Amino acid sequence: MSVSDQLAPVLAAGGSELSRQLHRTEMRLLEVADGGGPALGRSASATLSAGGKRLRPLLVFLCGGSGEGLVESAAAVELLHMATLVHDDVLDAAPLRRGQPTVFAAAGRDAATATGDLLFSRAFAELASTGSEAAVSALSEASSALARGELIQREDAWSDSVTPERYIERCRLKTASLFSAACRLGALFGEGGSGSGEILAGFGSRIGLAFQILDDVLDVSGPSERTGKHRGTDLLDGTVTLPLIVARRRDPELAAMDLRALVSEPAQAAAVCDRIVLSGALSEAREQALGHVAEAKAALNSAELPPHRREALDLVADGVVERYA
Image 1 (spheres, rainbow, N blue to C red):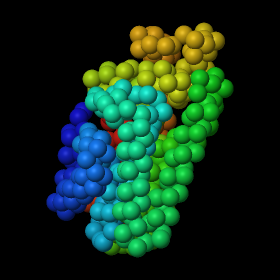
Image 2 (tube, helix red, strand yellow):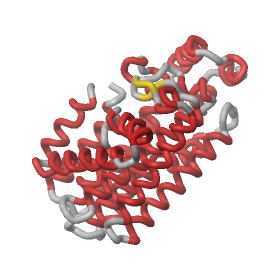
Image 3 (cartoon, rainbow, N blue to C red):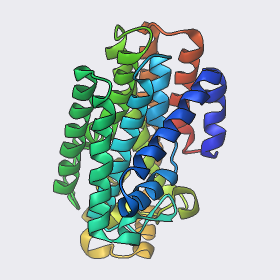
Image 4 (cartoon, rainbow, N blue to C red):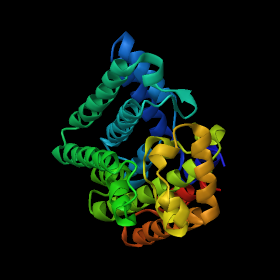
């Protein structure tokens, strides 16, 4: 299922205003990229035009409805997300992102680092323009969580002792925190005020966890033409994910392998991926993701939301898992 196929029912449920808000956000992102000067502007524009699902801006609007500050919030969370991707690609020396050359590959380490820094700083400038200290604080907390999650991932590289609990904590910090912040910002600036902010932030955190687990499943199972990267990229980077943790528990021979020594090129990573698939680990990981989605949708029962926005948020939650199909 393509991204456009997944988003079509969400946009239909959200109404025409949602499409207009997303368009305004896209225009604002392009303005920000162009404001970085010719050299950085090109790299920033390439990063933003590479697309993506714009899930985080979507969550801002669905949790907020309408109100001043929502477009700035949506742009801010996407800019921070893009900044982390660019910096991740520098750390991983990644050649591809969504099937396109990364800024690192196209322009080099220095340009990629500066591009990520530009996007990061402009994210906070967007929120600062709203005059809301609470908004800046929410994004700052998410930013700190992202950094802590990255440090844990680096610390755990190639480790055979990572527990599922440690993995989930890393995902909560590195991925779910920004989903949660997007929902919190929507509630903060939305017409309903921040009364349901904690509930919606919890919803965002849960679907963020599901999103990351399924991303890690797709790294093992997904063809490169679908994921935009080599199959087994996490293995090549030494990133320990839930499918690998579960597969090691199920397959003693796999658990005994020194993957740092055995996996150094895509063909070797693909062979280990095949072994992970045979262990049944992907089904177990997917079930965990489904559990987080179910909890997220159940939490919305306590939120004060119009029916059409509740429906759209349910569809977003379901779409996180449907990427696996």
